Length: 114
Image (cartoon, rainbow, N blue to C red; front, side):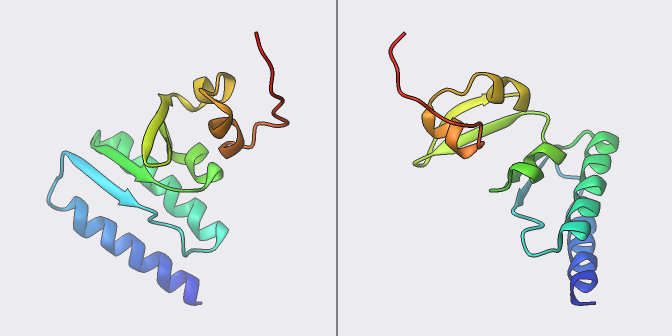
């Protein structure tokens, strides 16, 4: 019950923010406090809204699953600096450094020289 209230609050907050027709929309961990099912529903709605309105959405999150559900492009931050940008597929296929690979949980990382 509490989570559905949280989901409704998120939907109302998003509707209010979109009512002014912004050109850029900053979402700072908008679903971090919601249960997984509610989170996925809200993220699906956000993706639909973005497609329909074509508004630029900057979605800040710490969740790989969340990133996979909403991102067209990603920017990976490490120690307060952007270390890599691209599509999620590009970033996963060619992580810029070991920190990016660890963040994305891309598997075992072995040091080496090429």
